[in-house]
Length: 164
Image (cartoon, rainbow, N blue to C red; front, side):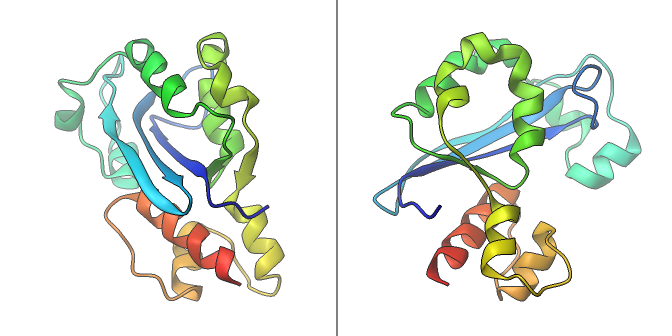
């Protein structure tokens, strides 16, 4: 599925376990008719525990970044409003993103009723003969400059895949 109206969703977490780990960052970008229609600036959430060195290395997020972080629940209404109109949600690994948001499903009806597009699945369809489908390798194969924010990398990869 290739669309021009969509929301890109990206989250960072303290780990991979939906039950025990926490969301520490959420960002989203909406396009309408193929044009940037707004962005939820990255929102940091304060976890119960300090980040491990491994999480800091993987995400680039520090404990200092999270000191003034919000509570995830205080942000759900904003996110639900942002993803309205049943436009597709695009993510690099939507099962992961939605897995962490599942516990808030009743407060995010717009998110959980929207069509979902997985960048990896689209890349496998468009580029069936490459050896790897991680985001960094897709950037390399598509000749896309890495960005400071993964959200923008996902956006750039999706837009490039749409052209092919």
